Length: 485
Image (cartoon, rainbow, N blue to C red; front, side):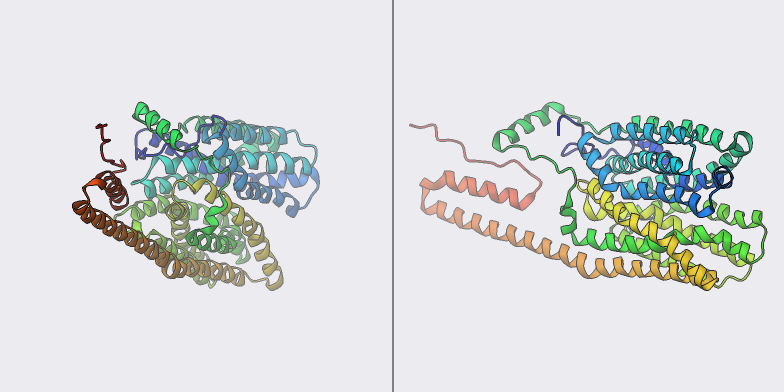
């Protein structure tokens, strides 16, 4: 590893579930807000960009698309960097990238220049902050992890409610170039958030050094993989990745088209834009509440089913909302969509962590984000083509609802039929191994009564039995050496 600090935490170190973890949570809250809200906030400057560079709306829309593609598609790259250098340095470098990209874009002479600076450089910087912050959050919280994930996810709607009016004010006062420059300065705060990501340390350093010395003497230390593709051997991860990819096809479609839906019904621009504010306000409270519910003792072991319910709730909301014929119907749709959307946002990474575990989470989240990147690029444009062909928003919302609902059934049935059976088979094998070890120990004990000269061998065998049986006492006891000559 070249002396890098890897933030999985040393073996045997328990997540503090508080303390400095609350500072990590605050940093993750800010990073999540920037990562998800920034691509939407940039769209405020599109009209000025269209006039400046004499391009169409579709050309400027590529700025947000490239931002999202970099946020999702660079997941494996971020996993490699985190496993190689650790979360804190990756995030601080990413903060510099995010800020410099927007500052350079303020001097752009063409739309292509903005694609490169805002889309690629800033998008990469945000990705280098988003993924490591989630990894560190899940290292610092265990018992309170669902609540922590819910609170961190609430950063997205909060930042959207703040960045949208701020961007409009900056555009009116300083134009798009001044707005880009100021937003670039704001993104430097990602470096401060990265500085908060302090790696977990071992309370008893001397004891750990002794144990590491003994382990190094027995066998050479295995190097950690920079990107662990063995997660694909886990049925749970494969099912989750497939379901998440299908879900993303339709999950982001309603927020993109709901304003146009209202305008198509003949309502004013201000009233139409208010729908997104309603959605974001409800989403703001739904995410922490969902995390609190997911952390309950009876609910947490079944969090994957709660996640499935959230997706079904979201899909059914889209299907029913497709029949809205007036503004009141759209308001009701945004309220229920905000609740279900917040539930999905709060639970998606909590469920992934529960499936793959702490050690493989950094690789798993990178690979999942890469698979979702394709769906993010295909989903909204595909819905747009359907709208061009039918000229009715009803079919767009129906398609989105069906995609999200199908993903819910994929993960629920997959978990019930495959993952649970795999766990039961693994538990049965462990119990069989323990039983066989106990039987072997009893046989050795019986032989000891008839043959007193085999005490040393029997003691070693009984020591091995204790290791397999308990998994709590990890010290292998051996019979004392015979000092007689």
